[in-house]
Image 1: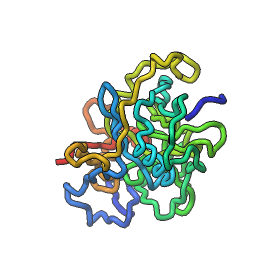
Image 2 (image 1 turned 30 degrees about the vertical axis):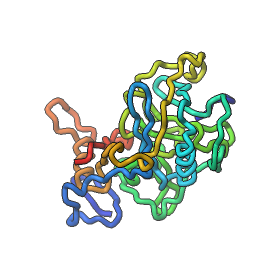
Image 3 (image 1 turned 60 degrees about the horizontal axis):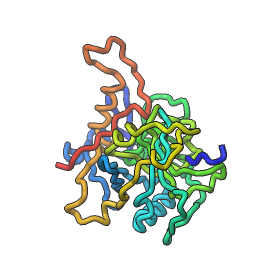
Length: 288
C-alpha cells in the first residue's frame, strides 16, 4: 500500500464447502495437486534468487491483466524494493523515475471485492473475526459475506496486493507489496489482492528493515534491485519452474487442515479445535 499521504467434503468435524464434490467421490491422489498456470505465474528475480508469485485473476481480473501488461513491457526490470516495514510488508515498484506504461494503465478502479456468485469457495468451519465465512478460492485465502454476497482476498503471510494512495481508485499494479508479518486483516476489502508468493518468501522477509517512516528506505543505496520480472508463459518451457499446489477442494487438503485443527502429536497437551485461515498450510511442490 502506498504511503505518500499518510459442498460436500466432511472430515471429522471439518466440512469444506466445495464445487459439488461429494465425500464418496474424492479425487485420486495424483489429482489432489494442480499445476500452476504459466499464464498466471510471475518470476521475480533478485540477486539472491527467485521469488515466484501466483496471480489470482478470479479475485481481481482487471488488475491482474494490467500487471501482466506491465511485466510484458519489462516495467519492473531494474525497479527497486523500496520499503520493508517489520512484521508488515515488503513493497516495490513505482520508481521515482517515470517509466513508459505501454498499453497498461497507471490506475484502475479498486477491485477490493467481487461477487461470491460463481466463485469457487472451500470454506473452513471455524468462526472468523473479520468475515462471516473464510476459506480458499482456487488455492488462495478468501472470505465472503454469503454465497450471494461479496467475496474478497484475505491478507495472509505471502499475500500480494496493489499499492495505492488514499483514493480507492489510485492503484493499478505499478506498485506491489507482499505481506511478511502477522496477517494484517484490517487491510481486507480496503485494497486489491492479486495473488500470493508460492516460493521465495525468505528472500523477501529477510531483507533489511527500512529505517524511515513506514519502513521506507532512506537512501537509494539501501534498496534491493529487481533484476527482472517475467511471466512464466513468456519463457521457453525448459526455463519454467514446474510447480504444483495442493488443491484446496481435495480430501487430502481437508485431512491436512483437520490435523492442524486438532493436533494429536505427543507434544501437544491441548487441542485447539480451531484454525485461522492464515494458519492453514498451502503446500507447493516441484511437479512429479
